Structures are given as C-alpha cells and as structure tokens.
Length: 327
Image (cartoon, rainbow, N blue to C red):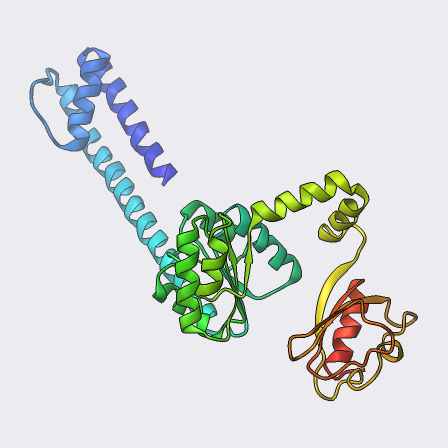
C-alpha cells in the first residue's frame, strides 16, 4: 500500500514539474493540470500551448492511469486481505471456543479484569475473555489470549464462550448493573457454574449474591482492609504482600481429596509429613460445609474434604497428586 501511494506521489510531482517546464506554467497551474489529468476530470480551463506539452500530456496520462490503477488494486487487495484475516481469525477462535470444557470465562478486561487475566495466564489456566473494547481486544490478541469481542451482557455471547461447559466465570465489568445481568444470565445457563462477581458499590453485594454469584469481591472494601493492615500491622501486611506477589515462593492451594486417595481415612499427622511435603494445612472444608481452621494433627481426613494449604509449588503438586489418588 505504501509503495502505491509513493508511486502516485511521484506521478503528481513529475507531472507538475513537467508541465511547468514545458508549458511555462506556474507551479499551482501545473499542479492543477496534473490532478485534472490523473483524475480524468479535465475542466479545460488550462490549455496546452505547445506540441511538446501535448506529447508530454499523452505520456503522462498513460503513466498516471497505471499509477492510479496500481493504487486502487493495492487498496482493494489490502481491504480484502484484512477482511479475510479477520474472518479466518474469528473462525479459528470460534473453533477453539467450541472445544473448551471445564474452562473459565472472564467478562471484562478493565482495571480489575486485566489483573485477573495476568494471574490466569501465570497459572496456566484455560480461559476465554469477553471484552467489547477494540483496543483492549487487540492488546489481548497480542498476548495470545483467547478473546471474544462482544457484549458480555448478551446471552448469545455467553453461549458462544461456552458457559454451559465452563468451570467458573468472573464478572469484572465496571458497572454493577451489567455484572448483575451477567450473573443472572450465566446462572440460568449453567446452574453448577462457580461465579465470582466484582461489586463497585457495597450495596450491590447482596443483589449479586441473590442473582446467583457464589462470591462477590468489592475492591474498595478489600483495599480499605489492606490499608488498615499495612498501617496498623506492617509485618502482617508485608507477609500478605509476599504471598500475593509470590516473592517467598509460597502459594495458597485448595486440594480436593478424592475416593481412593492415600490421604482419605487417615489422620493429618500421619499423612502430611513435613520431611516429604513442606506444606501447612491452614483449613479443612468438610463436604457438609463445616470448616476446620488450623486443624490439629489427630484430625482425620475424609474423602470429599477440601484442604486449604500453603507451601512451595513442588510440594503443593505432590499434595495434589496424593489427594487425587496418586502416590
């Protein structure tokens, strides 16, 4: 495309200089005559007086027609190619989304959603982002994130993102009413979906939970709490920050104990050996909903329990393997 524009510019420059020298016209009149010739308008108010000028005009007409034709064909080709690339890209994304199962859906890639996307990428999770802003969509595409440029509040959009087969959904739109609509729609399409919603206003928390959100996160409340901890208990705040940004190499993990796991039916002290697994079990969530905080060593682990653990990545992977029935 750039070469075609350059060819047209050279043709205009050549015509202007040529008519000016041969016909002894001013640069303005020469430019005017050149543009008339290229566009085939031919008002006729500037006349050629010499035979040389007429011969130059004939040659220039033939050459400029070629330059214009080249420009037009290049422009059409560029438009067609961009449309084809966009179409094939959309089809490729649609095929990928149709194969998604047990994945996550992130609705909105704004200030909150973009941080969530980075965390999901870092964890290697399978997810799709629904975002309506073209600039953010382009940025996500450059980061190789699977993204659907659509309105997340529309039922068809959630359906195309595979909400019926999804594992979880995060409603991160900036407007509470939009998040409310996303939660209502997603809950209707998938009753078993785990839904986390962002609440900009504290008053929206109750509404979002009634609409079907399992968890509602209010950044203003969390931010205020973190500020209070950092101000009053700086050592605690620094420890929380080190876990959050992973500067200590420690992570929190939830581990589901399955039937047939070597952990099931045994006491905590007999299964979590610090010499083998350098992890700390912070809490055990029972199948019936009971939560045991800081469980004692004689606490028996049962199939269906969810262990909340903190430790290094390798130790947590070993614990996950044991909980799922591996050794």
